[in-house]
Length: 389
Ligand SMILES: *Cc1c(COP(=O)(O)O)cnc(C)c1O
Image (cartoon, rainbow, N blue to C red):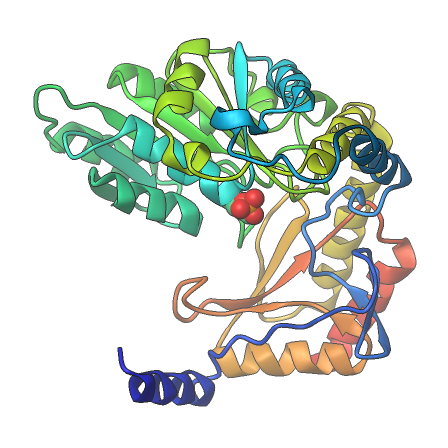
């Protein structure tokens, strides 16, 4: 690509209403944000439990800074695994009810690390078509054969498992988001586990949007589905969403975690996260485990929003979801942007999600709810939506 190619491509994106712009809030993450001096009610973050600006987490980070400083100084394999990370990994393993856990600086890195450590060109990765970009990139980077099955379609997956030969020395991996990030719908984990067992395959579950929100004590989608530990079941939990901080972990059998330490390049060749992250996360885990009231609050806001939108009788699908992700599918890019702009005029910030993040023709408002929203925020949004469409 030459510089003039770039200029031409950027102009094309702009003309197709596909150019992304970054909005820059003037205050901390929360339901009420200030954008270029304008107060707005935001339905845009993944801070589902309202922990991102919570005093207990801030205190955890401050205490960690006082004891450990702000930088780890090196990758975790060299000298950057300060003892607070060992504590964090023990708590994460307990949280996931697995033998061991490994902390990564981000979910993107965790997904790249797991897929490239477990799969190579002898293996076949079976992936839901709408999996997160980091799982797609991890599969590509692994050089495994990448077979994408229709979204949540168990028959299609079973057919593909049956009809895709795996050479000697090769293995199968089934890879899925638990809660899909643009729809809020969910993968059928018990059925996927049964298929994994039938084909002696790994099941890798990215629980970015389930962790903290569903399951007993917010332990996530695998706990919610009641799946017991299994040698070929791997959970990836991200910690920048309901947990309110950043980073991610992989929870699995001890041998899998030991293998990742040896082979996951996105773990090995990156500087260890700041100890303040670990301090904040230790506090976040306590808040999640004791967070039944926050989860109940989130469920009340979800019910209020869904009831409110249903009474508007809009000609758009509100995708069924019991999670913080509530998607109103409008379809056309320009129309979706126009509705989002009209909401913004009335003081409501709801992201318009367009291709390539979602399939062509399914542009949508992604209304993201938090336990920190009030009933007034929700009724205000529903009224604004009535006017905007
Ligand atoms: C956000 C997200 C990730 C990436 O996690 P980060 O910690 O933000 O890098 C991975 N998978 C899914 C499904 C996500 O929604």
